[in-house]
Length: 111
Image (cartoon, rainbow, N blue to C red; front, side, top):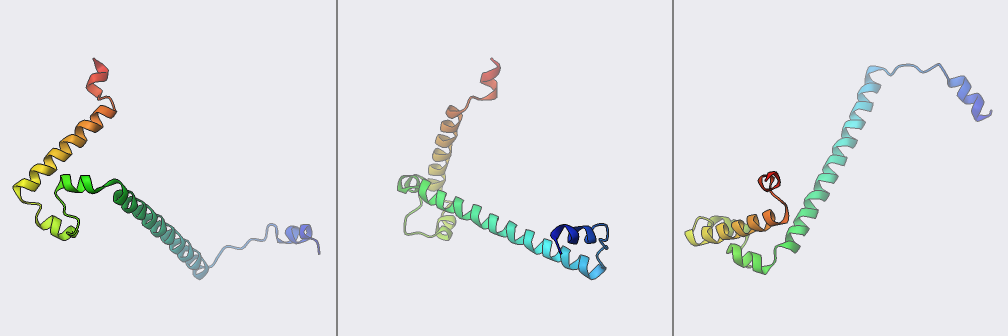
C-alpha cells in the first residue's frame, strides 16, 4: 500500500478518545509541562546564582560588611547591628544614585 492510500483510508474516521485515554493524554501533558517549568526555573536560578557570585566581589562584600568566611546565616544574624546597617544604607544609596544616573527620571523628562 502507498502512504496516500493509507491516509485516504484513515481520513474521516477519527474516533474520540475514551475517558481513560483522555486522562492519560492530560497526565502526559501535565508532567511534561511541569518538567519544563522545573528545568527552566532551575536554569534561571543557577544563572542568577552564578551572576551574583561573579558580580558581587570582595569590595562589595566588604562594603556590605559581610566577612568572606561567614555563611549567609551568620550575616543575617549580625545584620541588626548599627554599624552594618549604616554600611548597607550607604551602599544602597550609592547604588540608587548610580542607577538614577544611568537612566533619566520621569520628572526630568517633563521639564
